[in-house]
Length: 76
Ligand code: SF4
Image (cartoon, rainbow, N blue to C red):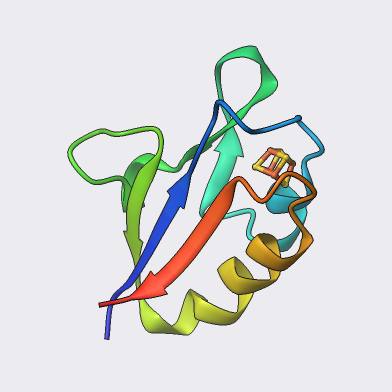
C-alpha cells in the first residue's frame, strides 16, 4: 500500500533528522529546509509525496524524530 508523506515546511526548524532517517525521500531544499525528493513528489510539490511501502519504516522514523512535528506519514 502506498505511503503518503507530508512536510509542513512552515513548521520546520531545519534540524535535519529527516535527512538522516530517510535520505532518499527528504532532500535539502531551498533555505536548507527539506523537500520531498522529485522521484516521490506529487505533482512536483516540495511538501507532498507518495513512497513505496518498503520505505514506511524510514519515513516513520523521520516523523518520530522531527522535533517540530513537521512531518506526517500515513497510509490511505
Ligand atoms: S526533522 Fe523536521 S524540523 Fe528537522 S529538517 Fe526535517 S522537517 Fe525540518
